[in-house]
Length: 171
Ligand SMILES: [Fe+2]
Image 1 (cartoon, helix red, strand yellow):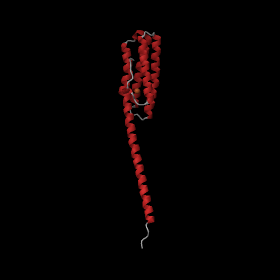
Image 2 (spheres, rainbow, N blue to C red):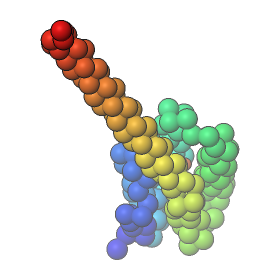
Image 3 (spheres, rainbow, N blue to C red):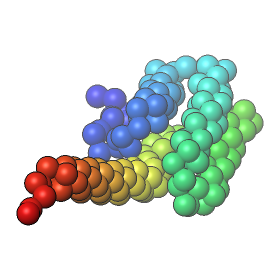
Image 4 (cartoon, rainbow, N blue to C red):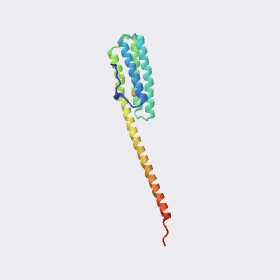
């Protein structure tokens, strides 16, 4: 069983964000598995470097999607990404200075590093997107009924005009 298993509850519902989260899970699992199988420091450092680089890219993609969707707490979310990035960047530095610094706590830290951010903060963005899309749907529905109402009024008024023209003049 993988150290970090993907669950449906982690889904944000934006295809590229979920795909990138899944990829980060893979890197964290790889780091854990290779450490357990006795990989040397260089290999572990290389996986951690990938994790640092890929998270930076992923955070940027996520922030772009938030910006496109007018996410009101974007700047607070960016600050959290910055903290997350610094945390694994420092981990990389610790590992470079002392290869024995990796313990089970390091792996637990990495697991929480990602999962708690997804569950607490990224899923708030998912809620926001769901609400936004429901509100948009309501507005579209209101616009459709207003347009249908206008068409009915126009049809009635045309029929009335024709009716007037066809009414024979009495007398
Ligand atoms: Fe995020």
